[in-house]
Length: 256
Image 1: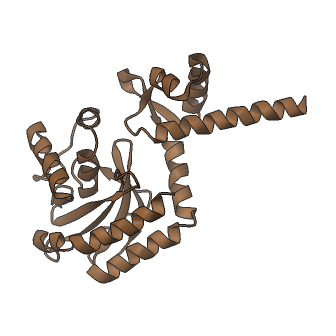
Image 2 (image 1 turned 45 degrees about the horizontal axis):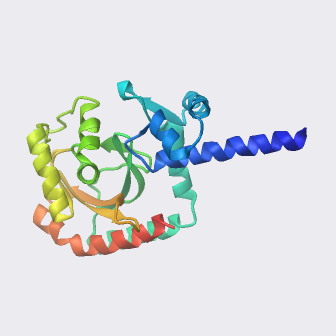
């Protein structure tokens, strides 16, 4: 009896982890039908498991589309795992070396649902700076990292994310019109980096480059920001070679 119960428990645990892993591979979310095809399990079984995970906050559903996404509990678990993993010290050292070289604050971020999530950060020594702890979240549409993630996702997914909630004009420079956003997305893909031209906070600029996995997809972003009186857009663009070198090193710590 005990052995059978243990086997059943192990089976449920394995299925739970497999389902969460599958959702993690699809930031745009998966429908119940798609999960059934991907995992090859009976639809009622997946539906029951999703109901339990949704109730516990591990997954959530997106409005009328009935797509399942990783929920806040899963995202917090992933963040804590990154911060306590063996590679965290190496990532932090890479960021520290970059900050020492360029003299400005640097951030490592990932896409978390419809926001940008800070997973690591090293502050510059300057007294005037924007302070955001790991775990902080910022918008997609008006930050350098956020626009980078938007530019590297399929257009249909990007349009769903941007339509999910009204876009807020954080500053007079924030891009809100679809045509302007599409033009910006094409430019980011073409040039390989993204700029925040005082779109999130007046007086603050930023530049972000992708951190790529083994398959070349952008799994994270490396960004630096500073007051425009201290860091011009031209100088920020001039930092690209050293930022891309650091991004490649960071990518090696995020992929097996």
